[in-house]
Image 1: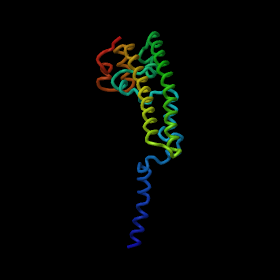
Image 2 (image 1 turned 90 degrees about the horizontal axis):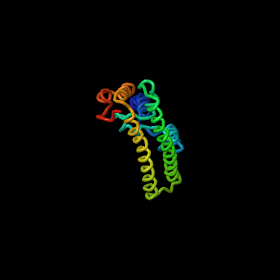
Image 3 (image 1 turned 135 degrees about the horizontal axis):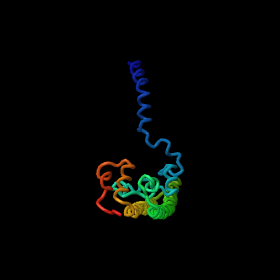
Image 4 (image 1 turned 30 degrees about the vertical axis):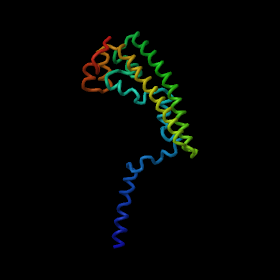
Length: 183
């Protein structure tokens, strides 16, 4: 009987290891991050003012974003005036997003330091997470607003081309994703 248990245990070890490496330990390795709640890639994106999915509500409802519009300027036939206006929108958005990204990283670092010190209090957590939430809300608004500003500068046809190029199907590929804002 002991031999059978040993054999079964030995047979199950690789399965257990496989389960552990396939999601049973989802945070393993994250404890080495400088700011535990933010990956190095996310920090980099925040500091560069990247979108980081903050504007999905606009993007996936047919309102193109300035960065992607500029990236496909030739494919959607932007004229010089459109391009200049969208470059200005992107520059404003990116500058504000970089500033807010820096603020967010700093606030997350403060929260991290509070826990790392072992002295985090409920009051500290409430204050810091409220600050983080406020910054993230403002950051999201910056990105969403840039989509709102970009949308009316594009024709219905350009929006259709954009949607197709981005791989969107359904209504977004047929009519620009929403009912108006034609140029």
